[in-house]
Image (cartoon, rainbow, N blue to C red; front, top):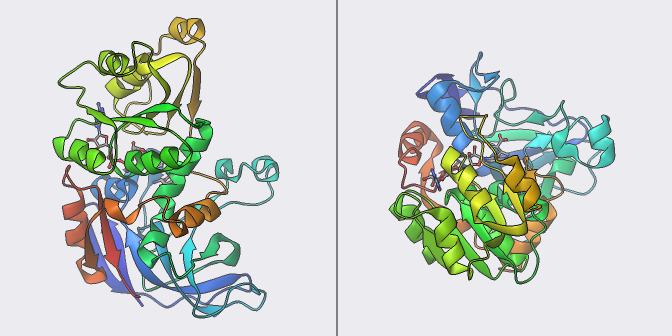
Length: 343
Ligand SMILES: NC(=O)c1ccc[n+]([C@@H]2O[C@H](COP(=O)([O-])OP(=O)(O)OC[C@H]3O[C@@H](n4cnc5c(N)ncnc54)[C@H](O)[C@@H]3O)[C@@H](O)[C@H]2O)c1
Ligand SMILES: C[C@@H](O)[C@H](N)C(=O)O
């Protein structure tokens, strides 16, 4: 089968590899579409993310969906012909976190395209059947692949406990910020503000229904949000850029008693926080890491037409052109590129 393999930073080669066989609990999936994520781009550019270093050739891609072509002998609920979205992180199922149900925190997770585990820029992937979710006819294979970043958005909306009528600020209008916007809207948020430093991203957020957009290089984020909320601040701020200034700005923009959730992963891990401000204003400050139990909700939301995930896509490319597609995806105005492999 053909695969796109990262052998050294800045170079993806198309290579033949043996087609995997499904284990007894696995399905063999003919991959249809795969999204290019910021973390794929980071491995492509730098060959590492923090302690995860690409030491051996690595197949990138973890936002994937496709068609089941074979099932292992113990798989009873999927069959060849089913289209499925693949949840890329498979936890150990045994540790304390897994037992508590917070399997996204499992330290022994196998996560596609995270060294040393290969991802989905390949014609076939063998994957545990319970992490493959059947797609109804009303959900396209592309939308199935986008269940992954949508899941990040759903988890952050859940972590923020967004409620009906809430006002929400989202800093960063990349795929995560834009899909968090879809998730918080479907959770009942009515006033959604989005900030970004790239004009095209702000326009994109407006087209997709943001009530107001803010460029923090042109106006003070906290002041702009205060103006728009009668001086009070938003109920919830979701930080989805990783930028140091947005981290501080999201704390300024939230109302007393409000909630700030950090989902962005910046290059700088240490950022000064005014703890007295957090205490005095009784803020809930939380992190949000990947997701758990979100795929069924993502698929339901897509099937109901409650969220638009495919609308974030700027372009698609064939597997052979994955390297070019990565170059295009690095343009700051691009939100999402997809690689089409099969049906
Ligand atoms: N916690 C998790 O589980 C998780 C999962 C996926 C991605 N992430 C992280 O979430 C962040 C968003 O992911 P993405 O794929 O959308 O990334 P992205 O790089 O495509 O989007 C980030 C956006 O933030 C904007 N930005 C930069 N500086 C800003 C500022 N000061 N204020 C407002 N916006 C600013 C950029 O212009 C860009 O549009 C990244 O840091 C990523 O690493 C975290
Ligand atoms: C969750 C996923 O989208 C993210 N890029 C990660 O590797 O953690």
